[in-house]
Length: 520
Figure 1 (tube, rainbow, N blue to C red):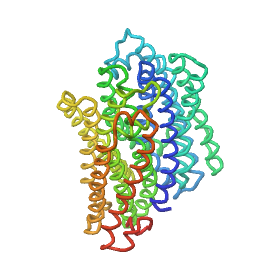
Figure 2 (figure 1 turned 135 degrees about the vertical axis):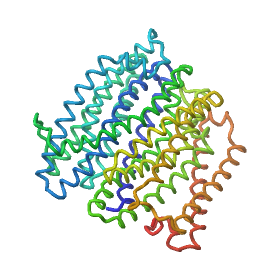
Figure 3 (figure 1 turned 180 degrees about the horizontal axis):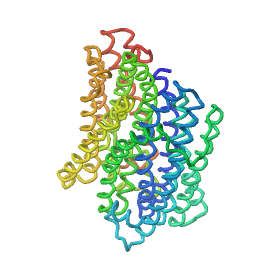
């Protein structure tokens, strides 16, 4: 399976997950607005998700997947099942102990992470309550990540990607039912917190059934500390540090947001949700698809094929991210208004969210490229180098925050994260292993230039239309959807046509963007 095909499979289902997440955010914006309850729930979820991203996703998969793939290919499924059982046993014991400690000391954790919350306030008390309900989700989602990694190893991408939508579906339905039953906001967010746990149970159970069908099994045991588990955990430590450092960037943003007026955390989260559409469908899809492919080629020392797949991934990623960045940057007010302006979410909230969205959009290509290039390092078993770059990016983020926030508040809050992501990506590209370093040919550069040129022309067209036709009154009416669809159609036509026209003199096949040759 090629990286484009695999990424497309993951991307479709991840897009579905993002749409489900967007619908949930729409329900939250309309039913809760940007208020104390929404801030408390989002902080509680963010803390659980932060530890998930540290332990479950990047760090764990980067250490586990290449080694599990090697055992499966070289030693067979029996040995792979033994490794899987040992890793599962270690993971479940460690996560239960860790979760109990965090739940007991959650108020202290909260004082550090959102120091802007008054610890005697109702908001602080509600956040502690919701956090203690949500945090065991870390155990369930970590198990799901382990099982998803097993399926990804055998090129089964669809089910794991699709199941990530369960969190949004369960919590969205919980809030919707609470709203129609006229239940208070305070009780509604508690119901949503329990729905988070329920979604984790269902997701884990479904994945257990999936790996069982593929001939894998898990047997819990207390004799799990084998040499292979030691190797995985040894290589996981740098990934944990790196992921922890990178998540520190996100938590710094939340900490600073907690000092802004109530509702700011919700607005910034909604902006990030919109930014996650292209990032999630493309960045996560490509990195998920690339890691097992690159790991296989690297294990076979087939660096030519690995570089070819990487180049295709980069061209495909740049095409879509340049388009997404252009569209969001030129239509940030329109996008937020169409997405969330209804019910209790008013024009003031739209302005805060759109400013933050613009800041996030600046770093969108860098976010996606960093996901892709992290897969390159992980496939080579190098989990240390990304840690060093992540530390540098956090330091830079802190410096950016000190210098930019006083002048540009909400936009600056997101922009600082984007700038640090750009620096991190540049370092990852520069120091890529020579065996997987992309040959910057004239054709490759011209294709990137074609996409950049298309982005500039598309931006100018969209910006002109917004200045002429978009008004606050239109943002409050149902006609905003018609305007949005017209702008999206215009953007697709202009961007695609300009790119194709510029590629035509180079190679007629490259001008046909639906052809495989366009991404080679």
